[in-house]
Image 1 (cartoon, helix red, strand yellow):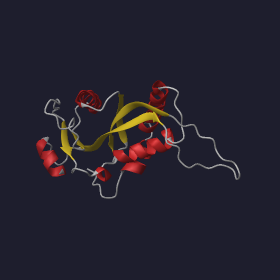
Image 2 (tube, one colour; image 1 turned 135 degrees about the vertical axis):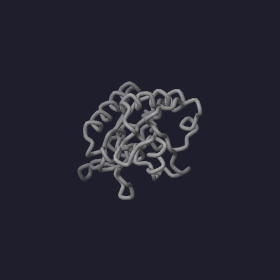
Image 3 (tube, one colour; image 1 turned 30 degrees about the vertical axis):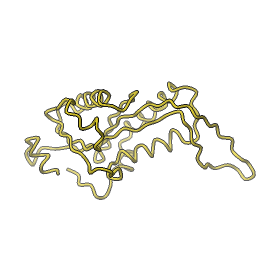
Image 4 (cartoon, one colour; image 1 turned 180 degrees about the vertical axis):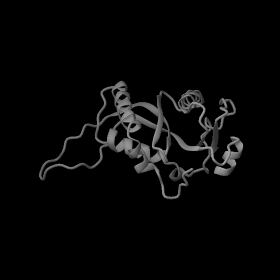
Length: 186
């Protein structure tokens, strides 16, 4: 795949190509308590709520460098995907990039704009285990949502912003859960 991506982007063998993976994660005010530590003979009190309010995090990460690009959006659809791709292209600033994503309908829309330096490829259907961004969601849920209670969607989004900013400033953390042994760095 890397050789064909280089060819499609008209790159020579000595030009760098960074590989990113992209996905969307849903975060909401629907709490699900998980087991936690407590002193003996103490039963922890965990708040719980069933409010159906959600935000979506669009993220693309490079396992090799630990770089993260993310946006919090109100929906998971083609319009939000276009906004994310515009921001991703702006951040990549013309650098040759291969971005791999799943085959959601809004990812494959012919209405999405093309960028001369960004090549989009798709992972096989029904294979989320191949996408390192799934590990980002797991990490964020462990840090962010397990046993937390949000008074408002704005509170949740503020916390999402804090966590995403912390992660984007710590590439080693992103590499620790996203750089799989089967990946080839270019």
